Image (tube, rainbow, N blue to C red; front, side):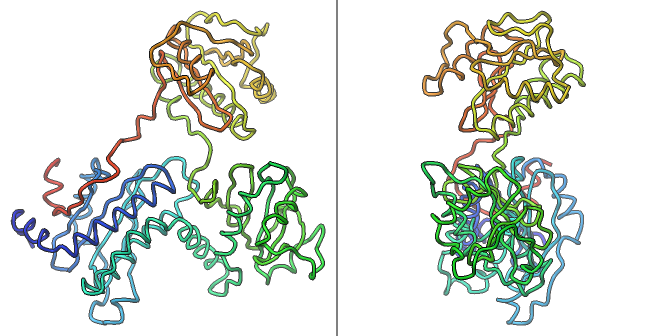
Length: 490
């Protein structure tokens, strides 16, 4: 079916209910994912009826760059939707037929077909520092559900709450992900209640003991599998601490911190202590001070920090270092080796939560830096030397690393003339790196702060991730015909 663009616009402008549903669902999805994964965009391709042309709503150009693939999928083929029986009124509320993932690089998508919405496919960004795609996929799946139900209810029963649901969906997304994974292993008979566990983990993570946040591991076991657990110590049943007694659980975590031991719980009480090598299906929380990670068996699901769940791995990806190294005429093997060395040193500092600085010196002759010089320089490609460098990075001052992949010095002091873009709020390491790289253009400086942010400097400037596309947090949302949208660039 083909209609004039002007007629399409008139039709959609007249359908205030559809526009509002799409707008509020997109907005809530975007806001919720931004809190969970960092700045995120969202988009949707949809057709309400089988006879409708496909529409697209992409207010922040998430799908720009994918036009050839979308044209191939949607315009050059009729196989993009597997319809379901739309005659049964029961299906209007109770069944959504999943649609195939489009498998677009850099995007996460989820779609479905129901009797109220013939086809819908939701998209968001695949951030490189995500623990797992599973919670985000559950989030998109819920967006499919919300729009289907809103369309089925029609405007007379529309509450406008779908956007709010999606905005606050992070806890539920993690819950749905765990339930899906548990269902694959255990079937429908899952006895552990996930919501109390998730709420308890956030409470425990915020509970200090003598001013220190928790470290250690807490593992949840299905009651049917408790007989298979080899307890190192099991508590008397009448004295098992309840999981919701955060202070007591926090104290017990001291017995397993920085070890291969874990507290064991059935989701209600703390039952005892066991070794971490548990084979039956289990859910584990690893507390690492200010933040922690949640696993289902050995697969990481998400992290948690400051009373909320997140997809953040809390480890720097260092794309800026890769980009900066490409600016220099060095052998690719040297570039790869240098990146691996810097990544290992940065992650060591992140894991142990201390600040440090690394100077990558790519000049033809060694850049003069005041510090503790090593004679001879030591090869950082040797694991024992790399571990030594990780220890030396704790000493005040920078590590001096040359393009020969050797450590030439430590405790180095970075000096230089004042530059205009200094930021006194960022501290001495930050501003020293600005000054030093402004004066020495053949160097890259990597600064790790004790609270985990990593900054990269080159030629007197901090390098900002080039893949972060700024956009307005609030924007007008209006669907367009997909064919017209594609014609704008193809």
